[in-house]
Image (cartoon, rainbow, N blue to C red; front, side, top):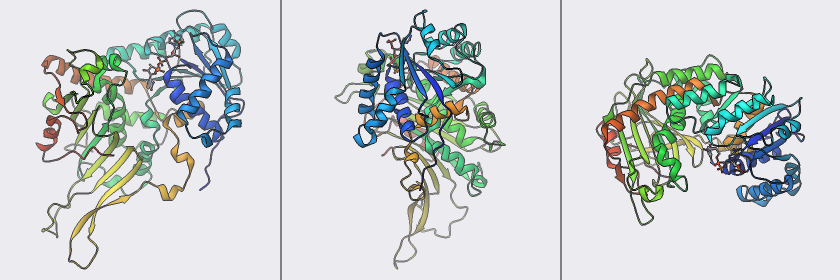
Length: 484
Ligand code: NAP
């Protein structure tokens, strides 16, 4: 199948924090891949800013090394394309908090291009940079500004952040990245639901027994200990990524596939979430298994921050009344995997009573590893041995349909950065969505703080604390295996 890549308009992309980890690991390699795919125009420019003094050549060398590190196969980095990419890179020494560099940045920006400012720096600089862009008259009415989590620590700080951004940029200019929304399969979830007649009639409490959303990580806090310990799984994962997956699964069909129509429907889901009862929440913290515990990794022996959370959530609306959504995420689990499982009800009457252990249908939307969609079906066991039933997956990973289309492999950041340039906000969070998610999350965290119960220890390499299993068992259900 031939990939259809439509080049975007020419652009100047300014990356504040252009020498940092996110820029080197994700943003710049993604842009390189978009150049390789023919989507980044030859005269587009990327202007990196940071305080460190560096010549343009030194910055280009830094990014050449980053491409080698993060796009390891030499055949994916043809020398002439790497050189062309280097030509697109500029560097400005700039202090977001001071006056250094702003005038130089202004001189590099061209008037007739899409202009985007990617704030790949700590959130304490977001407001300052937005203000400086305004003061130095670098932001035009159509410029985009891109920010990424953490978008606040609670509702109050998220509101303050939104206030700082909207003081200088209109909401239509603000792109809040949640990279989960850039994943191919997450968008396929919308296509599956809203472009096919098959699933939507079944997508409700009458037919869906429950939904499970899992984001499991096998790594621990890995050098992010100080940040993570102030945040925890609830703020780091549930408030943003898992909430977005929940919204896309539960939302009503929007009237059209347009940014505000989609985001209005997602917001309605967040507002329909019941407050979660403390007994419907489980907090865990991984203990030592020779490699050190969570407490060792964050260097805080008294920490009560959770590295695991499981929740039973109710979406209080007509479509979902009575269908629980079980959410879980944790570090140091058996494997890295993220999926949404929509588990359907059993048939109302079985004509095969002898096979009572049969499993109900489930639609599994897997985000990682191996993005794809599978429908769990029950079929007849082949052969003449009588009417025996067995479970079989109907694989809808689309691999056959899409052939070896390299576009299907595109990283979430590739899609999202191109959407910023195209001016399409559909896959970005709106300010009111972020605030509504915090309002819901804050209540759960406040209950935990009132409760003073420490998180339950769990063994690294497993599937989480005992109480999380019990959360499902008491409803007569069980979690799907955490496996790769
Ligand atoms: P990082 O590696 O510490 O990089 C920070 C960058 O900002 C550096 O280029 C730094 O260069 C620059 N910087 C710091 N203070 C500055 C100032 N006053 N003026 C101008 N530049 C300044 O951080 P990171 O991991 O890339 O993360 C950046 C942001 O993205 C953070 O908010 C983080 O939470 C978020 N994020 C990161 C990831 C990730 O995978 N890394 C994922 C999601 C979200 P100088 O020191 O030379 O100024």
